[in-house]
Image (tube, rainbow, N blue to C red; front, side, top):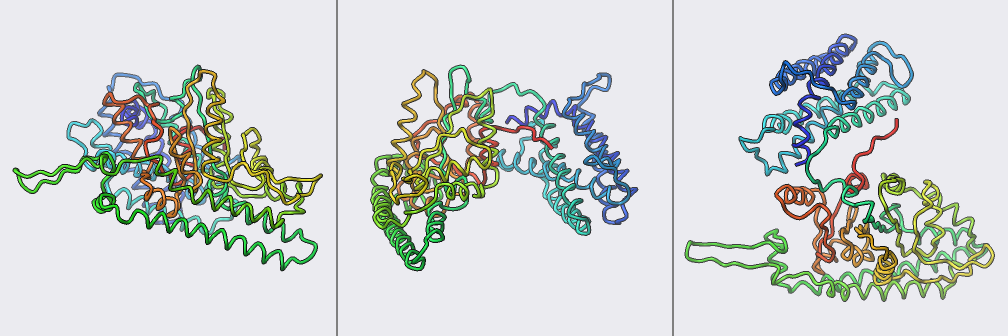
Length: 538
């Protein structure tokens, strides 16, 4: 693993950082007025001193080792904090001890998390000949996690009497210290191919990252259609109650059609014996299922032969959703319920939408990366592309390609008609293909599709890498019934990295139409996968 390679170089850096941690803990213990905090700082100091002595055994005492700039920055951050030089101000007294605890906390949290993740990646057991055995096992120890939680609880207790301004300072110190910790671990140069970050595997000379994303429930937390409906009701000069009733009926009809389509798909697969067996035993496609009751009897099933993924099956299964979306849009247009909406009003409301945490910075880091050729496209069922454009403009993202339906305006007011170009899963797939075909400059495209709904499913499967953020139970249920596998991204990356290290496929070898859609819990996880760590400004 990449971290294990880096740790060899970190044996030089960790003793240096532990020295300043020990100094800081000793100083903080002297100025703290809380006995529990004094005890924690004393334990900090003793623990880091023991770690320092252990790691010194890896170093030649006669050799002078250069200290990485990341380590120097981290040391200076801790020294400034414990001396009271914080955020351009000078602090004194017990509060400095609380600030220091906030700055030291990321070390405990990160080490405990890394230890647990590395141990899990190694199957829960570290081989005796693994040179990192002691470090992994000591940091994966449940006792460290328990201690970390106790110290976090103590920090919360000590911070309770602080002002909002002082709490903001602790948060900034925590973030800054965590950033230094991450820089510290990433400082050594790796000498092997890695699957992370994905951008590293896109050659700017002859490659391109082709990024697609949905909008509603992917970038923002809400659907745009109810927002536009509320605007239309508020803008009505008369008969608001009648218009509200019309909208209620339209949404009720759509929900009923949607529910019926889901129920039909779920019912159509119940008789699949092999699918049920696979689910029962928690097996995966392409696994070899081997059942042996004696040395003379062996039953072997290749699951891929009996439950093979079929893209055609997914296309056919999603046809009812295409029909119901077209029908719903026809009802909206025919009823003229969007007539009279003001374009500027739509832009203002669009600009007030709240993005999911991490979404804007994800797109900014990709679009502003001068060493990465990237094409970013937003695909949405929204009735009004201007709503989406204004949403992204509000977070200073105006260079994205927006593909959505267009509400028709006469002067500044909506006629109630819609230029309907993106209504169905097939429409999104056609857009995806058209964009891909238009980039015929000879560069190799690595496509990533980020989705959140059933309407994204065809594109998620067509892309080299399809990812859903916090997938809904409906999406996973329908997809699974159609033969799609939803797999957590992180453990999949570990498997891929191990394959690369063992001389397997190259890092950029991502195959479309595999039947696999990856899942992540947040935009931060997706950001780490594609862009990797980039130092933030504080």
